[in-house]
Image (tube, rainbow, N blue to C red; front, side):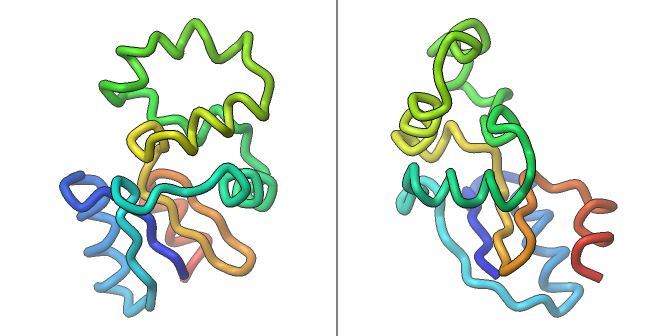
Length: 116
């Protein structure tokens, strides 16, 4: 499993604690210093079955300062992916990526259903 997070994020720390408590092995990747590429994001989005908008950190300061709430509906998917890949802080976190699983954000019940 690849665990992509921002170490200063309390939700990411909570998710990491949950993984550790359940003995789930993972490789940690800091989204700020090693941001996902557009290709990775496209692959994960396809594998997750989620709409691309679910990958945006809508509560983040950068998302709000760029006015993306109003801009995203007019952007095509390729432009959205390039935007997400431009700054890890635009991506909702944590992301947990496995062979058959991609989890976006930490919802404990969702993680339990997918991983336990």
